[in-house]
Image (cartoon, rainbow, N blue to C red; front, side, top):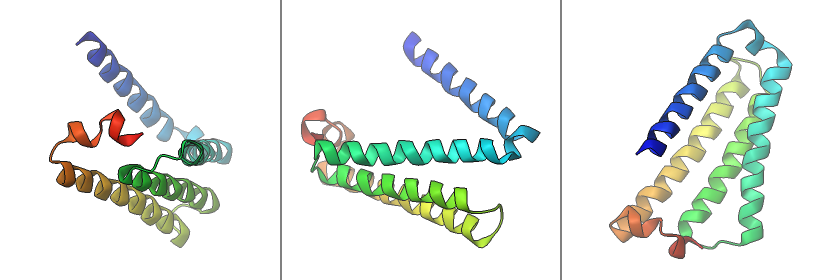
Length: 126
């Protein structure tokens, strides 16, 4: 239980740090925004590459692979856009599409197996 409390504390600390950074004047500087979105894009692309290298063929993992490509593309759209213009809104739509695709995969896996424990077992995913 202590490990769960520690994880929750770390999560809250990260949220507070991100909120403080987001509301600071430093956040609107182009290098900060570029580094955050570039980092998110690289992490999403790295996840997709790891999926290709491991060649995991489970249906749920295919949804995850496609969703990571959507997330990477939305980060690129955020880098190329300015706040409140049409491309900024398109980036939000791309990100939401990836999120809904991933959610659809999770719901489909749950409805197919009837339980999350079998849908997410390591033996079935790998």
